[in-house]
Image (cartoon, rainbow, N blue to C red; front, side, top):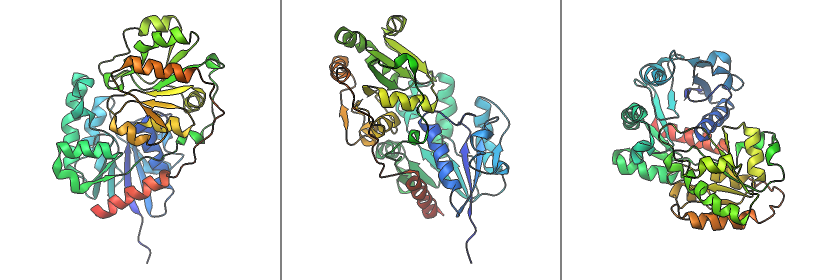
Length: 362
């Protein structure tokens, strides 16, 4: 007799209606895609209000559930009632900081980072108090904790040693889901030498370091452009002292959030991709830049080193003059045609290893 499929509730309330966004959004969409394709899983998704369309192309509409509420209220309702949507579940999987209370089956929590504890002042005061207590409670309550890097697991276990037996490292793919989208031209950058940094302006992302080094870069490469992609910070911001002046001069172009097609084009045409972050849980821009054939400079952060073990150049995160010299060197080179790196690890591997963690916890 064939066992019935696992009834699996994946929580993706942070995914916008477009289904596109940064690392945590990309993670849950690709995980949903992989789980939905399996015969041994009956996938249900908890989506944000109005964002059902981000998942209905992957699972039947009657398996996409929502809860009432907006803003901070969503997190509170999700924590209190999220485990009860869709009927009894064998697995409830939180993918961003929270695991609902009262999970009857296996409770799984993806641990992307420990920034709420490592760098609390990067969060606004309200978010600091809204995130930290329920995150710690969710970490303690989960039957299985899936860390996206060994660096994140190390940080988690340093805070909560009792979680070690329940914790598994499941790395992201070494390719990029952006290879599935069509590149979209960015006309204003065609033919111009540019460096690309992907990240919000929160202090840990260290965008200010490369912005403030850019005047030195422009002195050597006058037509060079620094392209900054990413949303606004959720708390304090540091875009660098020279940001406003350089942006007014056109030397720095802040593009905010861009669609996936444009992001792929930017990775494929940047002379160099910059990852100066001081603290990461995984380091998706470094992995994506390498997967799409770009030269990559990263800080010495352990998670960034783990995400780009081969091919990236490591630089000290507090030495703008070192970054300036490296950027000038890359901007002076003509980038060869894009050569996509073959992926040895894909989302099917992520799904299978996640399910293995679930099986061990049952």
